[in-house]
Structure formats: C-alpha cells, structure tokens
Image (cartoon, rainbow, N blue to C red; front, side):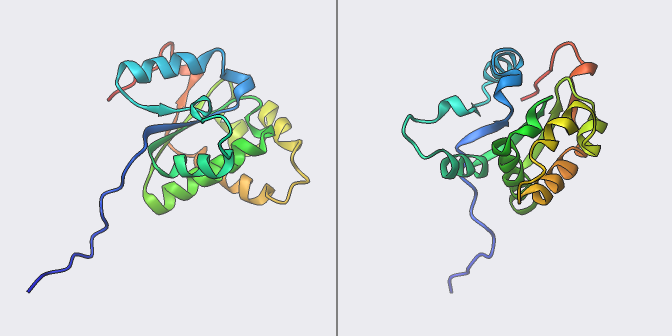
Length: 163
C-alpha cells in the first residue's frame, strides 16, 4: 500500500536574499557595498534594478519576496516616507509568520528606538503618511520587524557576511 506524506514539498527559492530599502538614502552608497559583499559570498540577492522593463512591479515584487530565503530590511532616515517600502515590509512580515522566512533588519544611520517608537527623523518621515489607510498595518510591521535581532551601522566598520 502506498503511503502518503503530509509534509510540505521543499520550496523553490528564486533568490537567496531580498533587499528592502529606500533608494534615495542608500542606492549609490551603502547598497553597492552590501551587494558586493553578498556577491563575493555567492549570495544571489535581489534588488529592484533586477526587474525586467515593462514588468508589473507590485505583483512581481511580492512574488520575489515570497520566493526569497532571507529578507534584509534596511531602515534608513527616509525609509518610512515610502509607502512602497512599507508595503514590502508588510509582505516580508507575512512571509516571516507564514513561511518562516528569515528576516534581518539593518539600521542605517537611524536609531533602533526611533524606528520602534516612530520618533526622530524616522518618525518625521513616517508622519508624512499619517492620513493613509494602511498606517495601522505599516505601524504593526515596523514595530515587529524593528524588534528582530539586527545590525546597526553605528556599531560596525564593515559588515561581515557569513555564508
């Protein structure tokens, strides 16, 4: 008699890591160094420049987040004034909760407490979106993810990426 298995099939990952970031804060500086470090360790990371031209961005990005092993969330000064970044963050938290995806926050030139309490420059950036319907969902995602074990840019000279 053939036995049936109740275990879930192994997931197919499209990327090792998805990087969630605010472009105007880090695209031409820190991000290139991070991507370089990941590549040297043979870690296939997705960033938005990898999208094909003409492709619908939102559905494809949400799929890419889901198909990644790890999400790296880079909180920076203007991160919270981007509804796009915050929508991605909500999806990342869902993948953490439902798919057990690894999430690694990185605080780049912002204090952990400013993200958790929505204060300082980070809180000021978030206040630009206060009238949006998704504010409670975004706030929840910010509070949850900002409490994960994280890297802080003020505490390191160079990130050590371990494969």
